[in-house]
Amino acid sequence: MWKGLSLRLRLTIVYAGLLALLLTILGATFFVDTRNLLIENTASYIRATAKPVIEHWLYGKKVSEKNRDIVSEDYLRKIARFMARDLTSRNTVALVLDKRGKILAIGKLLKEEPAPPSPDPFYYRQALSGENEVTYILSKNDKHILVILIPLRSGPGSDRVLGAVQLSSPLARVEAILYRHGITLAAGTIITLLLGTILGLLAISSALSELRQMIVTCQNITEGRLDQRIDLPARSDEVGQLAEAFNKMVERLEAAFSAQRRFVASAAHELRTPLTAIRGSLEVLLRGAQDDPGSVATLCQGMYKEVVRLGELCEKLLDLARLEISVNVCKEDVVLSDFFESSLKQVKLIASGRKVLLEKGPYVSLKADPHLLKQIVFDLVQNAVQHTDEGGRLTLGWRLGVDAVQIWIEDNGYGILPEDLPRIFEPFYRGKGVSGWKKRPEGSGLGLTLVKTMVEAHGGKITVSSKVNEGTRFVIELPYR
Ligand SMILES: Nc1ncnc2c1ncn2[C@@H]1O[C@H](COP(=O)(O)OP(=O)(O)O)[C@@H](O)[C@H]1O
Ligand SMILES: [Mg+2]
Image (cartoon, rainbow, N blue to C red; front, side, top):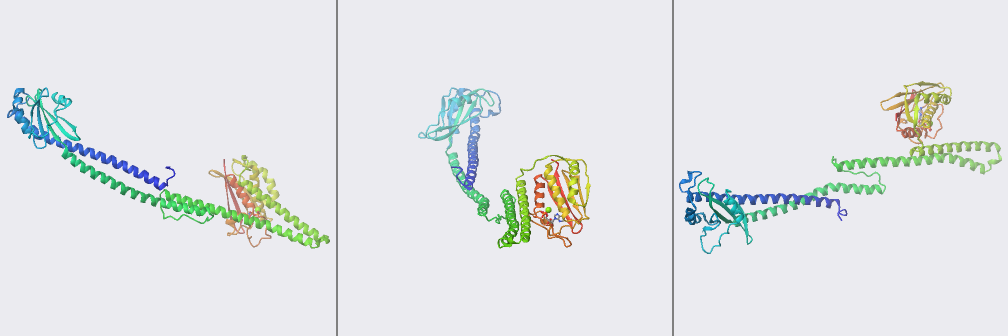
């Protein structure tokens, strides 16, 4: 049920609940404290007014004679009536009691007034045992009465207790004040709770409205509109961060999708060219050229070349697909000096007469697939050969970087045009060629794409720098592990 509610509603309920709890605790504490304070005040007032009266009747002018027994029980019995009368006022009724709890006098003003409550034996014993003053609240027919017991001593500061005075005062006035106070508190709590909930709801709604905007954008994207972005005013909170991360993710998705579309379009185009050529040749043959053995041979040779090209293209596409799911990478320890030593012969063979230099670096062993590593080097050497004159020079070498080995393959050939440089790793991309080239090499444009994929399958990266008519340098960085 709770999970079925919207986030907005859930947050508002939690917020309002907490607010209500807080206000209730605060209100209750405040109310109880005020009540205690009012009662304490009333009691202090009654005690303060009673004390001089009691001293006057009991000790008269002998108040200063400390720690001496001045009066007896008989004396108390005599003056009880007067003391009770003087201690009684409009709100307070006094009772004078002796040691056994017997009432000696009641200070009731009128006969028809209700009698004051008789003392609670528990508290009365406390008062007689020497406790200075005992204060408690008595509940009688839903009315609360404040009762104060003051022990009567035989002399000021004496331990002998002759009896006690009970002063009782109804708490009606205090309760009326408290009632008004309670009503105000409750009204304040309800108003604060309502206002707080409304403001909270507004704040939560505004925070979530941006999330709702994101939901709409997500739905649009699911429908294939990858150019959609979440457009929020700049903000650095969690919602802003989420929007930023989301936009970045969509951007990458869009780039990946369009790269894939371009790849499929280029692949189709590459496949169509040889197929068109083969189809043309076949049509010529069907139209009767088969009678001329000379042209049959030429056409068949042409078709054979195209079929071989197609086969190679398919092979490279398959390699790419395999590498992209990285199932074909079998890493083992490769010692670079041994690796270059053993490859040098083949490299020289591919270089067909061009000078080959090996700039050896320090001893290093890294985790790599030796077959893929060989293919990377051979492909780059082949490119270098294709774009260099016969008298050219190739340089291979390695050195140790901070957390990766750098391997370079450099030539002093025609170089790459600046406008081609950022694109040569794209699938099917072939450079426009520098003027002065003897011939434009015929390739699929997949070579460097494959090299890059192989390097990345090792967790490495490849970079290129080139100057027209000076040469090209490819640098591969492979992590040690
Ligand atoms: N060593 C190099 N010197 C000059 N240009 C190069 C070199 N290597 C690659 N290129 C450029 O990069 C393009 C793409 O190379 P590549 O992907 O190997 O294509 P292909 O598979 O056709 O050989 C080439 O057409 C060429 O323009
Ligand atoms: Mg190539």
